[in-house]
Structures are given as structure tokens and as C-alpha cells.
Length: 563
Image (tube, rainbow, N blue to C red; front, side, top):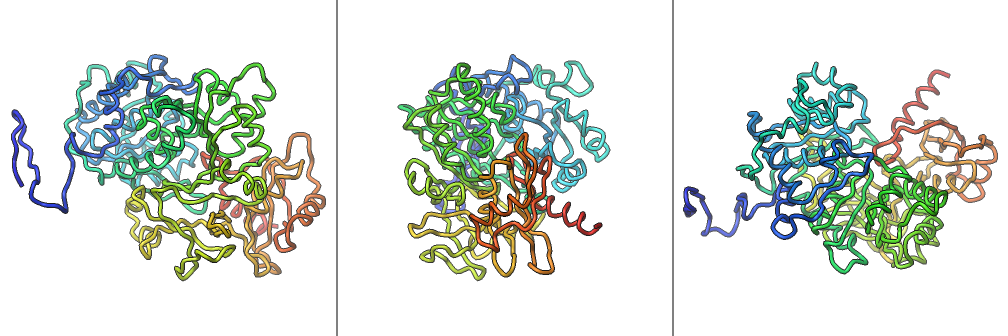
């Protein structure tokens, strides 16, 4: 190990060993805090982040260039460091989408600390438990969120250090008060790619959230896994204008939807929520070239808005669009193509917080297969090049070459989490046989394309058969009286589990249970057909619109126990 001198700086550089090295200096490190800074050397005045009007806190920060964004990050980071917060301290975040919130998250990382953003839609006791588990002591919050949760969080020992959207001159500094007088110089912090910069709490569709440890390297690899697809149809990658409307601060999505475009030197349009009107207006105003549509229901909301107001919106700048979580109806794809362009590139992806180098199914490339199978089957294609994945049975045997046999999708990738914080048993269970076990039930088809059958824990075991809730829901969605459906299994003495469909009715429709069951039976096997249809006003959901089926099961089981 040699010690080299650069002016007054003494740095130890290993020029002897080929293994067990550690690149952690500013000129060679992997750090999420450097992503924006790197672009300032080539295109500092290019717009970096743009908030829609609905996601704007302070109009002065609604549109920021790469140079402006990096300066804001540095001022927040230096403010955190001067506050005496120690390295690797967990800084909780209770925020919605805004430029100020997202840049503050990156500033936490650049200061060598760990961001711990929480889903604002979780119950207060779950938020308290999550933050206690990771040992958070400080919190950056939206003023509105603090008004709702502040008393509980303060009682648990959390100290607010910034109030985004709060009054200037308040007891807790607003964003602008916090950065006032802070240095815009690059923080002097040693960071390595394997360091943890963020802890994300899983959405918990099947159980209580786990604390997923995210490294700098994970984020880089996630971003790189999608950026080529996002720039389809463009002459230059820096022409990318990507719009996203799902949560980007407390959800894994920003690793693809924000970091990806920024690594290409593009521009990110950040909305407040996946509302059809907001999405259509932003795509029109900002000449969006790539859209993350979220789930199919959000895309269909956008289509409806454009059809109802055809003279208001222009989506012709969009060259690519992708979505997640569920199959898109081919009729919706055709309608979206008609709003954009005939050569639109579109794909479905599936990933999860622990591993977000996803599977991809390109609708254009496999159009005949897509139109023949969607939405009844959820084809998710093949793994992205950064992802190694297969399907295994309960004994860990590879199911390649056995089309139609259900198993669990397992993953290997550099875009991989580093474990569940302080939960070695859950980590060990997820990482066995040198694979990450996703908990998703997949099957191969004859061409080795993957079909997502269901979440493993969402499969209904009825009459000795495994029933895919996704397949049954796809049939129910074809009934004109049903807007949304969630299929679950309810314990039953006869069936083991009774296939039960919870539905939200379309406006102006009433439930005819017998008619819906008959409709389903004409399209499904007898063991797949719902035995009971229950109308509801709403479903418990994650931020991405995924239905929390364990909550539905618990509610119905409780109801059955009291009747």
C-alpha cells in the first residue's frame, strides 16, 4: 500500500494487490450522490428534475438543472454533516413526491448517512415499528405529513430536522431555511459502492414490511438495467424525457424511473400521483418521450382522459412506455398506440424491492402471443441481461424444459439487496441455494418465455388444485359490471379454500352474483370458478396499486368467524 501526496492530501492507494480492494475515493467510487454531479461536467444547464404543478412545493425548485440540483444536494448534505449527525445514521423520511424531497434523500446518501423513507399510507403503528427497527433518530418530513404523524413520531424519540413545505422561520427549518448559508461544495465523505445508503420497507402484500438494505452498487445496476429500453426511438440518449407519477421517494421505483434517465443525462418529470388528467397534461406540456404508466389501471385512466378531451392533449412525443404488476388488455394497448405513434415500444416488467433488474416482455416483439393470451395470462418475458433467473420446484430443481409446470422464480444479479436489516432468519430464507427466492410463482412456456402465475402466497388451494388468482381476476375484469377484482382463498370445510372474488363494481352497476359466477364458469374450469362474489367500495392497496390480499383475507375471515 503506497501513500501518495496530492498537495495537502495524503491518500493510501493499493498498487500491489489484485483482490480485496476498496474504491472509495471521489475519483473512483460508486456513489448515488455522484450521479447528478457527473453530468455537471458535460451538460450543467440541462434540466434534470421537473415537478408537475401538483408535485410542486416551492416554485423556485420546480425545475432544476443538473448544476442547480447538485448544488441543492450539496447544501443539504453539508447541513446534515454540520448538524453533527454521525455516519450511517438512519434519517427517516415522511414525504411525498417533490424535487425537494427526492434531492434531500440523495443528500442523505451523499453525506454518508442512510435514508429510511416510509410509505405515508401505512398505519401509524406500522410506521413507528419500521422506524424503531432501523433505529432512526432524525426525520425529514412534509409539513402536512408531520401534522398527521408528528405527535406519534416525536413520542417515539424522532427529532424533526427539516419540514418540507413548512413555514420559513418555523421551529423546524423549512427546506429553504435548512440550506440557507450552507456550503455548495462537495462534501468530504468516504463512500464505497457496497455501503448501504437506503433502507426501504417492503410493501408487505403478504405480511408485515421487511427492512430492505440498498447499496450504492444496487442502485447503479438497477438504473443501467433499463436505460437502453427507455431510450428506444430517440437519436440520442440525452433526449430522454421520462415521466413517472408513482411514489419515487419511499418506493424502489426511483432506482429505474429517476436514476436511469439521470445516468443517461436525460430529464425526469415527477408527478404527484398516477391520475389520468395529471399524466396527460404533463406528457403534453413536457413533450415526454418515455412514460412509466404504473399499473394497467393507471394507463387506462390516462386513455379515458385523452378520449374525453381529445383537443386538450398531445401524446405524440412518446416513443416508449412500460408498466408493471399486471397484464395490459390488448385493446388498451391499441388505444394507447393510437394516442402516441404506431412504432411505440412497449413492455411489461416485473421486479421487486429486493431485486429490480427485472423481467421484460416486449409487446411489439411478441405481439401475436400478447394478443392471444392477455389479459388472461400474465406473460413477463425473459430476464433483463443483468438478471440471471430461472424457475425452480419446491426441492430447488430447475424447471427449464418443463413448460407449464409451476415453480418459484429465483434471481441472481448485481442489482440485488444486501439483506433484511436485523432479520437474519428472513435473509437466510430468501437467499438459499445461491439464489434469491422471489415468492412469485412462474412457469415456462414452450419458447422459454416466463408467465407469472401468481404470488406464491396468493395461490388458492381449492379442491386439491392450485388456482391462479391472476387468471380468475382477468376473467372477472371482462364482465361489464366489474371495475376491479381481487381473488383470494377463504378457509372452507369442503374445498380447503373457497375461491372468493372481491369486486368493485363499475359505476351504475349492481352485483348479480349468480350471473357473474355463470359468466366465470363459461370461461374457467370448475375448480377455478369463484364460489362467492363480494362487492366492496375499495381495496387495501400498496402505493403502486397492488392489492393487499392478506388484509382482505383477514377481514373476511374475521367476518366469517363472527357470523
